[in-house]
Length: 209
Ligand code: GRF
Image 1 (tube, rainbow, N blue to C red):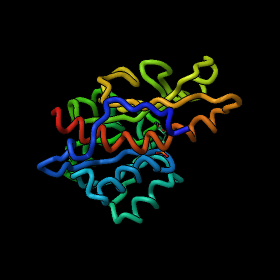
Image 2 (image 1 turned 45 degrees about the horizontal axis):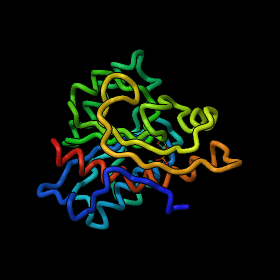
Image 3 (image 1 turned 180 degrees about the horizontal axis):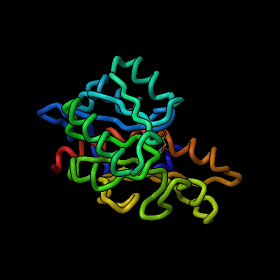
Image 4 (image 1 turned 135 degrees about the horizontal axis):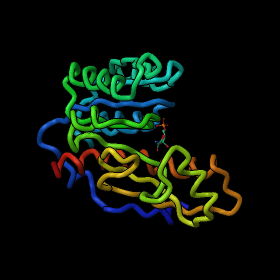
């Protein structure tokens, strides 16, 4: 089935060579497979970058242990400790700046972010979303696509703007929806493509900035 995956744009790591290493901060809420994809691309010498910090907002987030395995510092920021999204985002900004982060990677960050964060890193915040945007924005992108009966699904990496799951698209991957798919089986088909395109998108964004 991998034959039917379409990725656009098609770029090679050779074309994505960066002269100066990027300083990344990763924000994640879940199991952290996209964080691992970025960390692996760095370890394999494809993406010229260093992850300075991983911020997570759920105490049980598996990404914490994954980051530790890569020797990357983690910081727990609990949104429940703050009255407003803006106050929480201000703490994120301070944490990211304290770790000298230039690029913010939302790798499964299940919180809406506000202009407080967005304006602190203009056009330097990258999000991965499990649908072919602009279709199926929001938290249940995979399920919504399935419910709509689409025959092609996928994932998108884009720059973050104040409107949720909007902002200039960097790269997309399309996969087929198969007979009998559930949200879980479809997500399982999409995720390897997320892992493929997220590190590429980071290099693409850096090249264009
Ligand atoms: C991914 O499907 C991503 O597209 C969405 O959240 C999920 C995170 O997965 N925003 P993981 O924690 O990186 O495995």
